[in-house]
Length: 321
Ligand SMILES: Cc1cc2nc3c(=O)[nH]c(=O)nc-3n(C[C@H](O)[C@H](O)[C@H](O)COP(=O)(O)OP(=O)(O)OC[C@H]3O[C@@H](n4cnc5c(N)ncnc54)[C@H](O)[C@@H]3O)c2cc1C
Image (cartoon, rainbow, N blue to C red; front, side, top):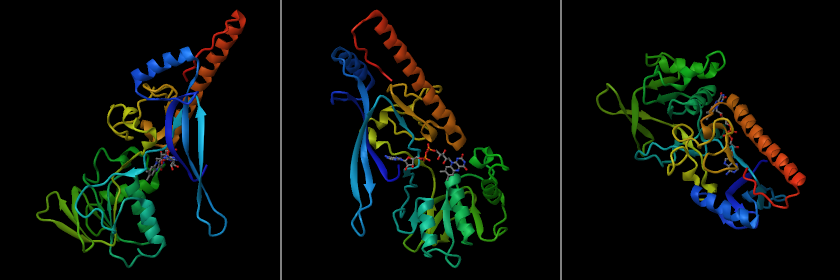
């Protein structure tokens, strides 16, 4: 669904009491709940933005679903990382390819502009470089390591499958300044300031003094993290390292590698970059893992129900999915 924002995901008894997602507390609560026989479910609430008629403003329509299982598939791109250097809040400093795209589409940034400074050496930085070059906009590319760095993401991608990213990798490896028209790389460099004159100040390894680039815009693309605040304070408890915010690279959601179910929160699943699967082709594995586990749980549940019918036991079992 488009224009849907999830604002809260929490465990509740089916009779409306909220459970805290802390593990020990959960176990305890589940046992207590088994006695009262109300199933524990996930409650997912949020709103849908609905276009008003004509010039009317958009309205928000709230929703709230309850389900035995919930799958997190929010990706990890919601909150861009910041360099945390002086001047980063200036209007010429952007933090997403979408913002760059909108400046180009509006004509604010064009081939006559000063170079756009792109900071970072990941796929987003590559997309920004490709976007700018598609409109003949000069690029000054700043990154922390060498172009041929063995940890570079581009070296992990087969060039025939990702020719665009390979083209960016080739640019980064061109050591001669000015060798490629409209592209200059600044390897082994860190940004130290974004000045009020639209300048980007760099400290480059092996170069004495600061390097100054006069920029039209600077785009900082140095990774991002997910926004799991809808877990209402428990977002710090779902990662591999408890107490630390989830991020796809260093602290993915802690799931079983076969079922993709959270180790600590039964019924909560996560797929995609949230669990470190950072390419589209890995998503199918996650989706299949979740589906297969849910199916097995259902089969177990059904066979349990059959046994109960056969033995004519009147008890109601709590199902933890
Ligand atoms: C620049 C870049 C280039 C890439 N290039 C490639 C490539 O060439 N090949 C490849 O295989 N992979 C590539 N990837 C990786 C690929 O994009 C991801 O693996 C894939 O998008 C993950 O899919 P996903 O559905 O898990 O998350 P996403 O595609 O990130 O989708 C998450 C969705 O969740 C929504 N969402 C988040 N929070 C909420 C909320 N609170 N309420 C409602 N909705 C919410 C978001 O709006 C978004 O629609 C690239 C990634 C980047 C950043």
